[in-house]
Image (cartoon, rainbow, N blue to C red):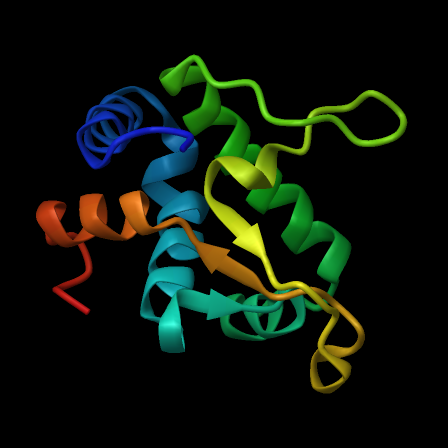
Length: 127
């Protein structure tokens, strides 16, 4: 487990007060992922819903948000082969296999503790 729902709440509240990113693009990312069916979304669908025409740019924003939350949680995720942290795991897990219908991308599944935190915060309603 990355963090408890209470730790996510503390991190999100801290970022909401002190971080311009969470108040703009980050909130859009969280809302879109949270409102996705089964809290699951592919990078392609996330890009589409955010009106971003470049999946790599979407992933950059997602990683930026995840890294900011990871720092608030004092969490360091696993590393890629090149040694860079895989920040997205702060917010989600990934499907076991890539989705052909989503352009061969893995789908991101919002962490249950984060779902509970967002439910409790009621930022996007209760889903």
